[in-house]
Image (spheres, rainbow, N blue to C red):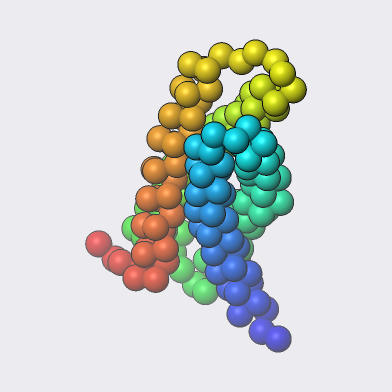
Length: 156
């Protein structure tokens, strides 16, 4: 099999996993946290943390590795506009995703504490949720624009 096509396929699959899993995790966690049933909230936050670890994190690592390999082997110029824009948007998405991971872990821990009968600060939980929700939008939008840039490769 052609190595270029193999790496390109891996790049596309990891981009799809990154985007699709991110969107799926966000929806799943959002619905779980809105559920009045504490067991449902605990399940959603636990699975969210696991899914981010198993799926999103490896895709985050593979994207720049496979992308750099493709740039070199496809003969693209590292500083083409569409690539510079992609780097910036990927960095923005990552800068949003890292605190989201921490927030998801904190939310899981807070729900776990409440499920065990402990007291938690509801205002803090709501604040963490609002940050989690707000940080998801620039990350999601960045990935949508990156998909466009990868397809169109504009030369503005």
